[in-house]
Structures are given as C-alpha cells and as structure tokens.
Image 1: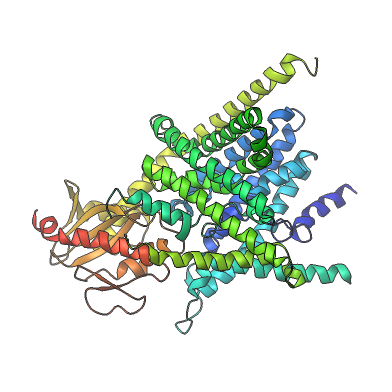
Image 2: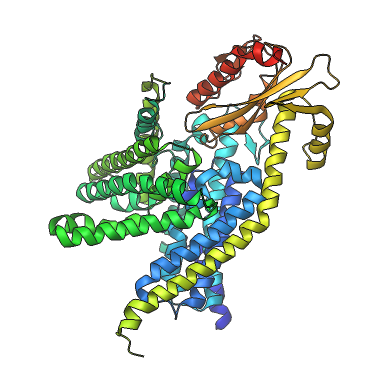
Length: 202
Length: 197
Length: 196
C-alpha cells in the first residue's frame, strides 16, 4: 500500500494530471527558451530542482508555518532555491547563464512551483512531496523538451547546436520566433488531449 | 537614435513589437484562465498595468539605491518579489478602505498579480538591460499596456469563438494558444513602424 | 498558549518570517561568497577570449590555452589591446559599447589595418534569445573577419562583396543596431589603429 501511493504520486503528473497540457500551468518562464534544446534542458533541470526541494522544505515546515504568512514563507523558500540555481549556473556554466538571461529568475513565479506546494506539499509528508515535486517537474520538462526538439530542428536544422539537417533544409524562421512556440504548444495539447480522450472513452 | 527618444522607442517596443506576453510568454497562466470574459479581462489588465508601472519603477530605485551600493545584487529575486507582494498588499488594503466599488472591481485580481510572471519579468528585464530610470518607467507602462491590449483582444476573440465549432481536443486553452500565435505574428508586423530607429 | 492571543496573531508570524529570512539569506550569502572567485575568473577568461577572437587568433577554448596565449601575445595600453605576434601586421583590438534593440551591446573589434577588420567578438548583449541573440553565433561574427568597413547589411546567406555582411532573419533591427556600432568604430579606425 505504502509503495503503491509513491508510484501513483509519481505517475500522475506524467500523464493524466500533467501540469502543462492538462492543467496549463507554468508555461510562462520556460516557453520563451524552447527555441533551443540546450537552454530548455537547463531550465527544466532548474525547475525540477526548485520544485522538488521547495516542496520538500515546505512539507517539513508545514505544521509550523503560521497560516497568515504562508504565501510569504513559500515565496521566500522558492526564491532561495532559484537563487541557488542562478548562482551555481553563473559560477560553473557562465555561458549558459548568459544565454538564459532573466528567465532563471522567473522560475520563482512559475505557477507550477507554487501550485504544487499549495495543492500537495502542505497536506503530505516530506518524502511524498519530494516524489510529487520531482514527478511534476519531469512531467513539465518532457513536454517542453519535445516542443524544443521540434522548434530547434525545424527552425535552424540543428539539435543542441549540432547540425542535423543538411544544406537542403530551409529553416523555418517562424519556428524559432515567438508564434512558433504558441503553435507548437497548441498542437501538443491537441494531440495529447485527443489521445487521453480516446483512452477515457474506451 | 537620440537619447531623448530612446524611452519612447522602448515604450513602443514593449507595448507592440516585443509585447511581454506575446514574445516572452510572460503572464500566460492568468492570460489563459481569465481571458474568457471581456469585463474580467479589462479588470485584470488595468490592475496589471498599474502594478507593473509602479513596481518596476520601485524596483529600479531599490536596486540602484540599496542593492548595488551594498553589493547585494544576488538577492534581487527575493527583494523584487517582496517589493511586489508588499505593494500589492498595500494597494489591496488602501482600496478596501477607501473605495468599495473599486475593491469589488479589482480586489479579486490583486492576489493573482503577485504570482504573475510578467510583473517580476519586467523588473528583471529592466535590470539586465541596464535601463535608466526614465526608460524603466516607460518600459513598465509600455509592458503593462501591451499586456492589457493582448488580453483584451484575446477576450474579444474568445467571446466570438463561443459559437464556433472547435475540434474537441483544441477546446479551451488549445484554441486560445493558436489565437495567441496569430496575435504574436500580427504584433510582429508592428516592427516595420519604428522608423525613428 | 492561547491560539488567538496577541502573541500567536501578531508576534509569532513576524518572528517566524524573520527566522526564515535570516536562514535563507545566510545560505545564499555563503554560496555567493564561496563562488565569487570562480565568477571573477570566468569574467577574466571571457574578456581574454574575446580579445583573442577579435584579433583572429585561433585557440582551443580551454582556460589554460587562452591564458597562456593571451599572456604571450597581448599587450594592454590605455584601453587598447595590441597584438604584435606572428602576423605580418600588428592587430589592435578595442572594446566598444553601443545601444542594441533591448540593451547595450559590448563588442571587441580588432583591426589589422585602419579599415580592415581582423575579427569581432561579443562581450555582452541582451537581445532576444534565438533571434537577436544570434549575433553571438560564430557564423555571424566570423563574417566580419578580413572585410573592409563601413558595412552594408544584406539578406541572410547572400553576402558577397568585401563590405557586405548577412543580416539575421527575424532580427533585422538588432542586426541594424549591431552594424551601426561596428560602423561607428570603423569610422574611428584610422585613429584607433594609427594612434599607437
């Protein structure tokens, strides 16, 4: 039984409770960098790290936090982890830090982080919250990685900066421009919803 | 471009060609969930414009007069979000006390604003792009108005869409994102208008 | 303890928030101070690499190689970097900051003669990732090497004459700002290169 609940907690955000295409949460900060796969990967790891550890921390503190200042404490904890990501990137991966610009900081206002803490971590024990955080992060990351994969491949003919498609490929400039992100996400949601709807009716 | 015109160019770019919502995807969550109704969109849009204009200017002052002189710029994320949260709280208390009508019109949106990425985003962009105070001020207003414009346009289109037949899988957020994509393309068309550059 | 008492309602939240704040800020400060040296080393490395790139000196991009190459070949005098090295003509590299579409762009520009560039490298920029930020990509900066200014922008993939460079598709305005910065430095070329 105890094992089952961990597995269930882990699997839900990957499919039927996916934060991106079911709940449409938290696309703000990361969609902007999905025109390159490497930026998306680093941002996704940042989100997973922040989400998992702030869920864990808040869950440990959950019985001591005065309810009136709950949001303030949550924001503080989230911001702390985001700054840890920012400082680490700046010191060890400065090139990546430069190309992500302000988007690392925007993880703070990513609705998923606050959303999972409010909806899950405040009611559940730390280990379960950690699992939920990691799983929600992964559920979020894989959607964005797929979007980034298509956008970078079609937009510039490269993946992770390496040329994949040869000279014959005419880059679709629209894919790396902002509208490309909207269209890709919409198409992804469409496909995912159709797939899950079939599953539900069969 | 002369220095006098630079803030105006930034204002125009922030509102149209590089609309914070349509090119940087900031503030998407509330954009998608609120844009179903025109009135609520207008309320949220006004609240966002106002809070964004004031908090970007406030954060500029805090960043340049407090954080930089003391070498604390690495704490800027925390400080900015606290400034925003405190300001929103303050506004909420003020309008609750003095204007009941305004409180019912805008009050429910204020808590949504603290976690609106666009507000924090504007403050972070202002730092990273090294704007002067004047430019920051225009940038804040421009970004806010751009957001307001985008959500109003979206709400208008979505109201018409209620009678349209949309594929089941695209209903709701899916079709809204496709519309946002077309709006982003349309707004990019404004870039030809900035001839003063 | 009385749950609705003055302490529980007023003092406790403030004390709690204070403790959380102190803990968070101390962790961050410790992390910041411990990485400070690395950050400074990175910045120095980026600066030196930009100078070498602008001078057209090839290197393998590792920290040690950049440092030793820089120390053997570059001399710095009043804001200009002179590379006498193994080339026929000495190279002068200057740093210049100018307005971009979104914020300042800082570039290193190398001259191998008063009009001919040895190369260009970007020190910092704030343009849109994936669009304007592509001015940092090697193909864009490399096209200035060996060419004669002032420059004209042409459509991406069509540059041909010795004063033409490709603009970036989807980032026309950033390309224009960038061209203006480079051209303003090129117009100072004779005094930069000649005034040794």
